[in-house]
Image (cartoon, rainbow over all chains, first blue to last red; front, side):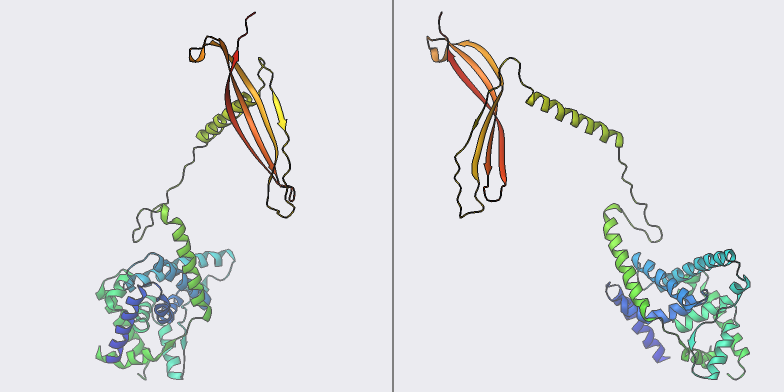
Length: 177
Length: 178
């Protein structure tokens, strides 16, 4: 966990640097994969997820909030993604496409290297949305439970509980682990 | 949490896919445009809050006032032109054009030479008989308003320059006894 702590410290350092305006690229390049994965939960395609991330990051930056308030950044992504999903859903209905497609769970996109990782991703796909989003924020975005709670407007205990339930469900679905 | 440490480790080994190469460019462009937009509207904003941007102040233009103002200005200009250019019936306007000698220099292209002087007397008023400087000789004082126009011309380029200004002249005319 020492490596994880150093990564978090590095990330916080990057966040502080971003407050100096022009270093936003460093911050964004580090955060973008996690943000994209987070947004991908509601978007049907990577392109849509990128649109969401772009809009959220620009909106967040324009408001000049404290960049250390990562919970707000993810809350912005989530809010825009849900708006996008609603618009997309209405568009889909207008175009008479199958509504059931919208209810399908969208798989997070990972660079899968072996079969065990493929099984892990498949197990992730089976998680309830509320558990999966906490897991995504915790594992691949390295948010604290306080930041997750802030982003999702839930208590820290609820965030921690969902995380534990998610891990338990994953473990149950992955007998090899 | 120790029960899940191995699972967490495996999860962390999963790498999310990288965003496309142009996402950074798009964000940069959007930020630049947003910054440009903010600089344009900065003067209109009062304070900024976290969640709600203040409503921009709208510039309410009073078209009625503008119309009345323009109408008044136009009337004033027309009135002034009429007053200045209308010939006075009492007196004959006297106009004289003095052609100026040409002092052109064939070597210079930026030299203006006098092209003429026009003097228009548009108003003359007889102010009655006076005895200026305790003079015994009665004098009739006549006040004339004129407009003098000086004109220069560049013979090489054909450009012309004209200066016009109003002037007032008071002349004393001896009264001859009959």
